[in-house]
Length: 403
Image (tube, rainbow, N blue to C red):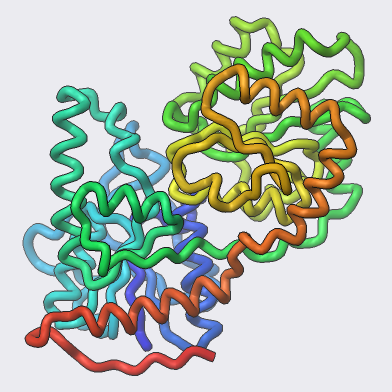
């Protein structure tokens, strides 16, 4: 089956969406299907190494605001050359905006099912567009999301919490399918790779490391993490075994985070690693003691599952879909997104080596971690269900084989 994967985020952009799309494309290919990725053009980047996946690029726009992630122009006017004479059996969009609208138009033109994955809680991002009151922005956005997704034959969500949220804004339950992003087993990390991380970032031997991986953005609730760590610093003597907080990632909130660290007077105990490509992340996980994730706006939080593949105990907040992928009291601590419980939980994990060992063993065996192959097979089932949901005058048969 030929599947069109329409995404605003793909190589060289590295984030949860691009990782999810690439993982799906590779697994569909391995299951003997024929995915084609449609993504915005990225200035100065050429698709030389595509893992055997066909990639087509659409004209894009970029500014200082979105320099690291160009957006495709909306489908106004003639069909872009990259989409002409493009045949497929199903269109699967991964955002509902510019490139998602291209996918929708093509699905209708070809008379085939339209499926979309809801990767992002968009209403949590309206602070980036302060041109109208929040309530107005949210209402306009929800109306658009409702219209787009109710026009799809299938809507994939990575967690039950996201499914509930979409139902609340009026998206039909019969269109919703929960399919988490698959997380592969990690590669082998050598002691030398871990030592290089410790040396590069001046991590004293024996010092516990609290790790965060993700975008440095306001919606990630990073002040909670920094403030909790600042409180914890008062509990430890100023020696080589003092905990280190390491933030891996970049984003628009980086300067504010650095200023918060300076204001708390904890610069010597905090490391900003900046952007790290996903294939280079594993030594960071292995060098860490605890994985802390303060965001309550995640649809899934793939980094949590990645951390658990390395046996990292996790500290997670309630809200969003992230907490569905850990087990409170078994391999993680899940708390309310406020300072006192977050600080207490972090301190407990840092002080209790036996609890960390117990959580680490359980994390490695977690049944909640989806595999890439399971994800691809479930997505193929959604494509079949989407065909059944097509109106009679737009129905078109196609076969799906799942190995």
